[in-house]
Each structure stands twice: as structure tokens, then as C-alpha cells.
Image (tube, rainbow, N blue to C red; front, side):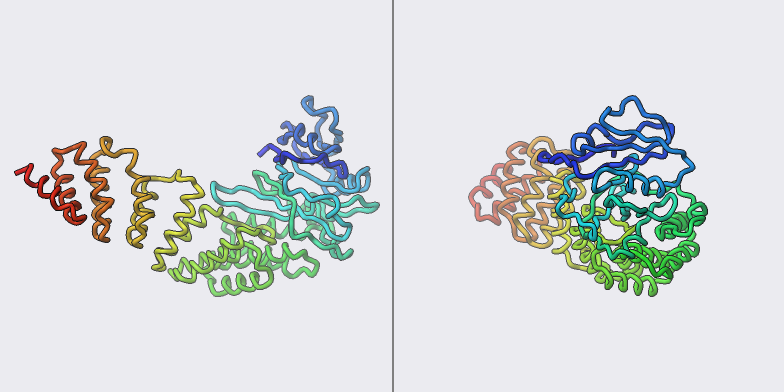
Length: 445
């Protein structure tokens, strides 16, 4: 996680100040400051500890009292910066410079939000929207205390939000060490506080308490679009866990109507339909989700599964729905993405589907992927049995030419194998090689 993605043709960015915020007094910065300095001319660290020895001399270092609120510290940087724009990073975050906006695209009335991506498993993710890139200002921008929030400033000044965000990656939830009671002590606390609290209750399986947090947020008038969507989706998720499935579906559909470009409402519908074994509906909604996954989500506190995992789920759903041709397409797409690096059982499934769907070319291809490295003299007894079973399926489809080629090669290597001999005779007969079949029969009389 502690690296900076830099495209090969990156230009030096000298029109903004990068501010790395750290609230850890005991550990070194979990970010490659050297890489940051390759791209950004102005980098500042604000930390409660003294300057670390391994920090490049070009980086400014400012210390603060741990009792100071994060929002106040960020506002101070916004007003003191010598650059027209300021980007705030937290210690341990990755920035993908390939998506970084050009200066010409930034406007005082059109801000670019930050999309923070957190891996929660091998194939699962959460994402959060926050305001991190802001213009220099002669007055405070952020409300809140330790959750800096620009909602009020954005709405009061009719500032638009770009649909293309800056992407950050991190290993934990942003502001995860925030005390909700401490945040509520200020009048202009961040609406995202309710999202954070709702998410915590949800993770603890306290769904009634979580739902109450989301309802509180939805009663607020001044909300950014992605925060409102997060509250609706969070409430729908709670309804799923409380077995109020009709309400969950209704909220999910309403959320999609407000903004089709998001993930969780589709996954909520998918789960409800799946629990009720409505395979056709489940497949349809997951296909919609897969299309959106290619584009991105505009909802805060959204959750998603990777495209690879989605393809596997789509394949299984297609089989349950009786559309095996779709299943083969999804599974084959997964196979191509993995560049063939899949379990043998997955290859066998592809082979069976190809044979069942009478796709000769794919059947031969996947048969070779399974057996070519073992034919003719490295087949175990288990592989021999599987080979015979699959080639029997070939012959049921009326495909005899390829089984002939295989058994001809195998019999030449292992002429004492009666099963190979018998099957070779069958394929010789079926491919009009009658004379050769007679000779083979006669040789064993």
C-alpha cells in the first residue's frame, strides 16, 4: 500500500501543495515521500512528532498538538498555502497519479473529489468519497472536528463535483479512530459521522442501531449526493439483514433511479433474489452490476466485489437459470483474464460445458489444456479415467475424428491397454477406417 503509482510520462506538478497528515507519534510515515517528491514540488508533512531522519530535506515538516482538531489544521493549511490548490493525504494512503487532473480542468466552482478505495478481502472492496483537493482560500473551508467536512462550503457556494475523482488507496477505513461523541461536540459536525457510525453498527450486526444512524442522516437537508446515496443504501442493507426484503428492494430500486452509477443497490437486490432462489432476477441484476462496475460508482460508503469474482458468480447463476451458453461465456472470460491460471476442476467445467453446448473447437481446446502435457506416457489412472469419460462425451456428440487421433497416439505408446484398443477400434470404424480396424482386430485374435 505504501507506494505512489507514477506514469512514465508524468510531468512535475508545481501548482499545488501536497499535505500529508499523520496522527501517529510512534511509527514512521507509511508513504514513499521520495516518490511524491518526484512528481510534486511542494510536499508538507503535519505530524505530532518531531521530524523523522529519513525524510528528504525538500519536504517541509510541521508539528501540531494532538488536541488540535484535524479540520482546524487543514483549514490553516488552506489559508496559509502558497499554492493555488492543496491536496490532503493521510499517512498510509496511495495516490494514483495516472488519474490526476490537469490544472486546466480545475475550477473554483468545480471541485474534484477524492475516491478512497479500501481492500476488505481478496476480491472485495469498500470506497469512500471525501473532499481532499481544495483551492487556497482566505477563509475556512472545512467544518467538523476530526472529520474535515466541506459540505456546507460546497452547497453554500454552488460548487459542482467532478464525476471523475482522484483515486486513493488505503488499508483501513478513513477516520476510523474518530470518537463520535467528540465530533458531535461541534455545531458544524460532518454528516459523514452518521455514515461512519452506521457502518460501525452494521459491522457489529447491530442493524437496528445502524438503521437509526442512516435515518438521522436522511433527515438532514444539506447533503452531498454521494452521502445521501450512502445513507439510503446503508438503510437498505439493514433491511436485508432484518429480513425486510420488500423494503430493501424498494429502497435499492429508488437509489438506482436516483443514480444508476453505483454498486451496492444492485448487490442488495442480487442477494435478496438469491436468498429467494429467484435465479433469473438475480442473474439480470448482477449483469447490470457488472456493466456499472466497468464505469465506477458515485456513492459514498459503497461496497463492491471484483470483476473476476463477479464473473464466477455470473457463471454459476447462469447455470442455475438454465442458460448454459451464458455460463460458458462468463467462465471463459474469467479464464482468459486469468491467462489460463485456474484450477484443473475449472478447466474440466469449461470442457464439459463446451461439449454439452456442442462447441467442437472449444471442446478440443480445453481438452488439450487439460491433457496435452500428460499424453501419451504421463497419464495417471485418474487422468486415464477422466480422459476416457470426456472422449466418450465427444463420441456421444458424433465427434470421432479427434478421439481417433488421441487413442491412436495412446495405443501406439501402450498397446497392451485393452481399453485403448477397444476405443481405437470404435473410432476407426466410425471414421471409415475399416481396413485398419479389421487389421487391429485380427492382430489380437
